[in-house]
Figure 1 (tube, helix red, strand yellow):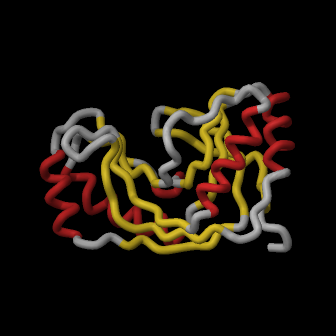
Figure 2 (cartoon, helix red, strand yellow; figure 1 turned 60 degrees about the vertical axis):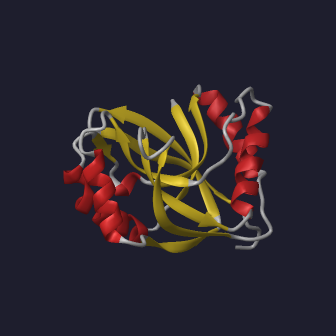
Amino acid sequence: MRVFVAIDVPDGVQRALGELIAKLEKACRGARWARPEGMHVTLKFIGEAAPEKVEQIKSALRAIHSPAPVDLRFRGSGFFPNPRHPRVFWAGIEASPNLTELAESVERSLESFGIPRESRMFQPHLTLARFKSEDGLERLHQGIEQLGTLEFGATRATDFYLYQSVLKPRGAEYTRLAEFAFVKGA
């Protein structure tokens, strides 16, 4: 099964991102837009894992703890790798420093099971669209500029989750496999 570790995005943030997507999606036909209800803050994409390995992963993730919740503020937007020739359009995340520490703890805990570390630096974001082509990209840039400062909401996280991802023609479907409270006493 295909699995990943993530923090959930609150409903209010999902609604705000859905409103943004509704305003922008007609401008850019070259983008495949994400469904807000499926958005999450990915801490670690694991990929394919056999059921027995999933049980080992769950066991390793249960041992992860942080002394404080993670504060997340969803704001701004950008493009990977750059605005001129993007592959991804994203919403930004400003987070307390322990979000990066949490992601690093997940990486460390899974490495002993043969799950390779991510080669890129951890950059928390929410994927809003992936580009099939650059058709409409200029209109998308204009639309973003007209909207001004983008603020989507905030949350305080005390839990993260192991999800299964099943790829379907209309996009990935996610099933929560396990919940992990990473703040003791929260």
